[in-house]
Length: 216
Ligand SMILES: [Zn+2]
Ligand SMILES: [Zn+2]
Image (cartoon, rainbow, N blue to C red):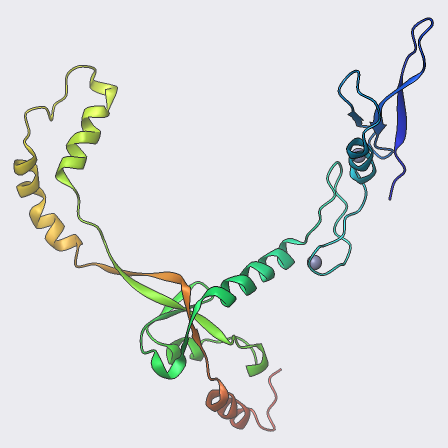
C-alpha cells in the first residue's frame, strides 16, 4: 500500500492551515474534498488505492498494477466465476436424454458424440458439460417495417420513392425471397441449458487407444 500525502490549502493571512485532500504518492493525483468540507475517509482510501497493487477478489492473488486503478479481479477469474454462476442456474439435461446439437469451443456440433470427437487433450481436460444448441430460422423481411424505415430515411427529403408502394404489393414481391430465406436454419447457444456429459466410455476408449503410447 502506498502512503498518501496530505494536501493542504495555502493559508491566507489569519487562516488556519487546512487539509483539502489526499494525493496518491505514486502519481500525485489529488483526491480532493469538495471545497469547504473537511477530512473525508473516502478520499483517503481513494488516494491509498490509486496506484496500489490490487488483490483479486476471486483468487486472492495480486493483480497487475495499473496506474490510477487498483484492479480487484483477474479477467480470467471473473470469466470462470461467471461461467460457474451460469452453470448453477442452467437447466441440466443428462447426455442420455439429449439427441440435439450442442456447442463446444464456440463451434456447433450436430450431437454430443460429434463434439466429443473434437475434444482437445486427454480426458481429464475434457469439459463436463456442453451448452445446448437451439435451432433458429432466419426471419422473413417485413414489408410494412421496410416501408416504415424507408419513410424515416431523410436522404430524399420530402420525396420518398416508396410513397406509392403499398404494403400488399411489397409483401407479394418479397414472397419468393421470404419463402427461400426462411428455410435457412442456424444454431445459437442457449446459455440457459447445458448437457451434462458422461465421458466414462469415451475416456476408457481413449485410455485403450493410448496405452503404451502416451501422447507426446
Ligand atoms: Zn495514483
Ligand atoms: Zn484471480
